[in-house]
Length: 214
Ligand code: AP5
Ligand code: MG
Image (cartoon, rainbow, N blue to C red; front, side, top):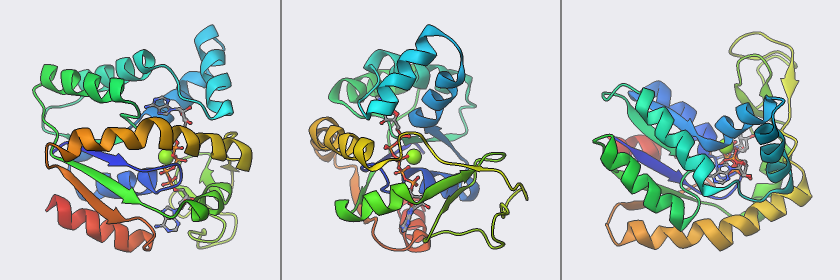
């Protein structure tokens, strides 16, 4: 099974992809996470990617599609892919078709996480992750069980994303509206889009996704 999780910044793509990975035989392919790895490197590409991400604009189609192609190349055929944050433009949607065909895969579902944009700034500015294992949290919606200690690995080191400030979030949302939302009809024509209420609780959204995948 290969699925796309589609939704604006803060819709819950990453949170749900992680939950699905644990419950199904699937792997999260997040271009955002891959680009955050790329920007760590002290290279020209790393610096370019960091500048684009911090502005809230989109990185070039060629760079992200090449990353997805390389990931699928290295993946076992029996493991399903959860595309998180990819594709984000019509060009990427067409590249994904080619890449999937090349790897003998097909797209089963495009799941749109429908959210109220006003709530997203709150979700994003409250987000933090464990610096050691990457587990995601939120200041109000998903706190650690013990204050300041990661539930999963026990680390006391946490971090926040540099693009999680209100100004950049607004640009990221504009990019979503202008370039990503318009790709939905490509998949609607194929009859593979399901809409899920992304404003429900994290567990309720996971249950809705489980029902689609079962
Ligand atoms: P990316 O990392 O993909 O960011 P994004 O799309 O802006 O989405 P987020 O990761 O912010 O949100 P999410 O939907 O994953 O929400 P999450 O689950 O964390 O991309 C970053 C940048 O990289 C882009 O701006 C661009 O520059 C570049 N990029 C990436 N891919 C690209 C591509 N394909 N092409 C070109 N450029 C690309 O949830 C958010 C918070 O809310 C968390 O704290 C969580 O705990 C909480 N939460 C989640 N669900 C709920 C819920 N149901 N109720 C309450 N709280 C919730
Ligand atoms: Mg994410």
